[in-house]
Length: 384
Image (cartoon, rainbow, N blue to C red):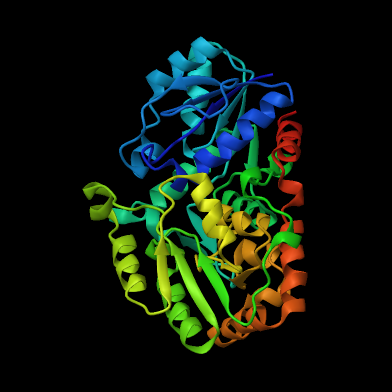
């Protein structure tokens, strides 16, 4: 099977902050090991030299990635590579891929991976647009383009049961029935960020918590900041907050200045320290190894989080708001509905050694089926 993996890299200068690239960099070698001939089409190559590479231009904005897939370039790429399967990591590009296949006279299956959902469902079943993709009122157009992508795919892959139910429901509302074409294939864990839970240091009455998520407003960073103030004041907890972006371009800051604003607010809090790994995976592992538990993002209707998996693979329990995929994936003892509950859970992790040991083991076990080889096998099965 020759597999052409079309990868949108939104920020090629900060690959460590791009979960889509990390996903591809982990998955492509595992697919190669499983016998697939993989070509990654992206602005930067995957790390494994056995994986083929076709250079593409990074879109200048997240909206160009969705509305300007570059049909001429797709036709040329398809003619050169002659794939059996095309993976659309930016699912909105699937209609253009279908048109390119027709023009190039190539009969290939299109698999769309819903790496990012431009919507979420509330507890009352109301569909809400993702505010990060609604600049200038474009959210409805992004949603419709996403639905067009679903319609153009032979296979639709998602991270989780939560993402599957939301994707199916959103598609059905716009006349796209996915039926047996929808498959759950979680993202692989990074084996560099895995350790035996027996090696995890149990807190001795004081714990270090880590928040390793993007600091965008739509990730619920204001809710996290409010909780951070209470944790350092009311629980025996110190906080480490990852600064994943560092200095961003003026264009990105203009479009959304919330990360800079939240970073400054968090840096000013006593008991909170900022950490930056500089894109170094070893340094990132060391930051995680210095923590005792993680805190999940407060993003409304979170469908999946690679940063949560990073913590769990290292044997770190993760506390989380009871919403979306988090409620599906995190042990019930670590889920909270209120800040009072979150503080109580954090206090117990810091002071109850047996409770901590149990949840360190459960966290590690939650990633056991996410080894790249396992995920690659599931991925190829979904494409058959």
